[in-house]
Length: 402
Image (cartoon, rainbow, N blue to C red; front, side, top):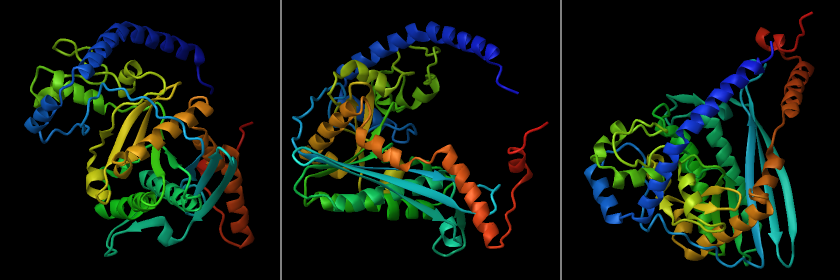
């Protein structure tokens, strides 16, 4: 039976009325947040943090003024952007073989006197017992690679492909390595994942590749960043709440309903909005915020001594979050490379970095690709006289009732 769109349309209309009714409260909170950012006191912030060292809600490291707007540096006449993106086919118990596929796309775009483009993808099938599991060093524990772990492995393959491609670029041209999404693999922060998983995927995988690119950075004009489109983060907003709320810091999470609640018991609250809402008010097109430090425990414990910074950028069409490793954040020229080239790429891509668009096009696995993969899997197993079973549920999806 198809979706009853007539009923759904009525429900959408009711939802729109609720959103409209809460818009006035949201507008007041946004004004309060802008004021709090402009009047921000680092001393007060640090004092509040000291009063609640065990606060569980993520607070960013702040060394400057969150209300500052930094203009873009001059554009580079010649530069290179290397981007990598990936997609995957997850393990599927309805198929006759346990396996998964990761397809990594890479785009290298050179601008200036010698423009060029190099686009390619590398698909890889994982099917051996060793490839399907992450095992503890003593072999006593194991975890199947699926879900968040497969997502982390895909991120590792993306940054490894990026590292390999960067090594092939000219060392005398300003170069930006650009990834899609976050540099913080917080999907593995859950207590449901053992440390041996984080060690293999983060320490010996993603963070090690970050470190290798950092070593290349010492010899050339090279920076690395990731681009988060339409970011849903609220770390800066939480910092503003900490400095403006009249309650003690330890009570904030209990006295305020953060996610849009109108039940806050005190004056102008800054909760219920996102960092991107704040910086849409504070940044002109092309400007960025100061650099903040992400404080997720997984970074502190598993990133090989590196930290991850981030700033917000008015890319023209949206407020984006740009994440950078500490070795970029500590080098003003590298920060300028990130700021200038990400802005350039967003303008060329009508709001989204064109190099990431190209890498995505190389990496994407379409619905028809997945269907062909499943059919090919059955055919090859059958040709080798191997069983080609499937579940009755999967079989039923291919049948038409008459």
